[in-house]
Length: 138
Image 1 (cartoon, rainbow, N blue to C red):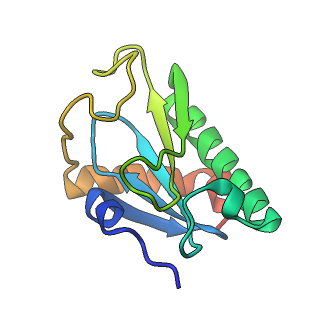
Image 2: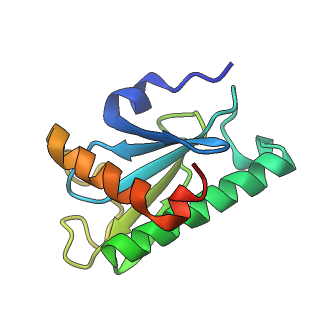
Image 3: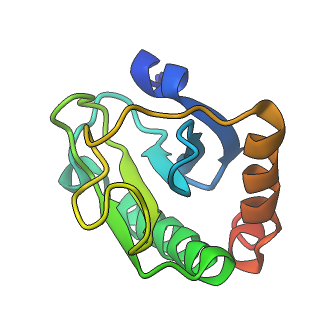
């Protein structure tokens, strides 16, 4: 049975359940930062997903990436699955800008997080859910 890691649960807002993954918003208002967590128990690597699950997660990642590009027009996207701290497979999608506080370094561990207000988090959630590529998955 799938259970979201407590650290992810504590550090994020729930956005939606996509066909294979749970979509989360990282509670750090310094970057538009979303996370896909495949709803598959006891996995830490993408190679542990079935071929069908891998294809679905890739489609979700592509849709999320396109939504971030369209909504925020970032300099680049950082898309990565890092399991150094949280072993549960989760894929970060971060819109990065040359003027962001961590640029050009990675965002992980660079600065203390700054939490969203509930209202501001809901704005980002609504924006991502309204994007056509995400709506196709819901």
